[in-house]
Amino acid sequence: MPLAHTPPHPFRLDGRLALVSGSARGLGLNMAQALAQAGAQVLVNGRHEESVNAAVQGIQALGGQAHPAVFDISNADAVARAMDQLHQRHGALHILVNNVGQRDRRPLDDFALADVRRLLEVNLVAPLELARRAAHLMPTGQGSAAGGRIINITSIAGPISRAGDVIYTTAKGGLDALTRALAAELGPRGITVNAVAPGYFATEANQAMVDDATVAGWLGQRTSLGRWGRPDEIAGAVVFLASGAASYITGQTLAVDGGYLAHF
Image (tube, rainbow, N blue to C red):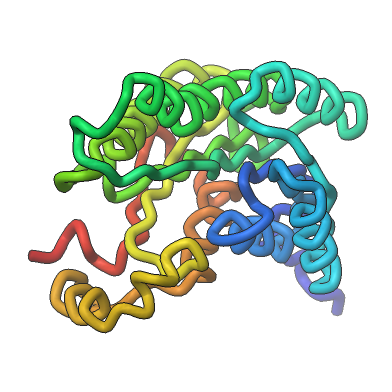
């Protein structure tokens, strides 16, 4: 008696192409690795060819499909050229993860307006432009396997704030709003737009804080899980939102923060 047909796993991404900005290291690299493990071809993005190629080789060594995409997302001309090349080489783009972000912790009065504009350009304007261009390359249509997926990486610094981090918080709050606006704009085309808001993750960029026992003690009291997040723990949320399992979810921000926002 023949075996019954087994439907594909709802989180599989076989046959889909994903671009992850800022994915040569840190959380972006973990997202790219997870998407590749789920079956997607992944375009690894960064400004430096050496680090991008190293990340691509690492994903390939794990059995994933990855290609380099070396360009600066804050350079509109470079973005336009990169998206044209993507279209020529691959045809369609199915998944965009807007991960690039810069942080500059300083008191409000220490910022020149040029600094403010620079951070807003990288953290908010650039993701908007990349999403706008990516949407033109995405398939349209309603259903679990149809349509594109845009996932913005925001922060728990979007809905909450603290002194000394005003520009980053402003930009991430704007990215939350952009997620909702793009969901409304692109929904009729079957493109979903969601966000993931990381909490405190033990990445290379946070190494000094990770090594500080005082911070670890504070997180032990401030988060429900009582610890730093591991970089690989961001990956599941991104794969889920990129998959057919999330086909009726759009305009939402999923906090991956160990309970930080829910805990007091």
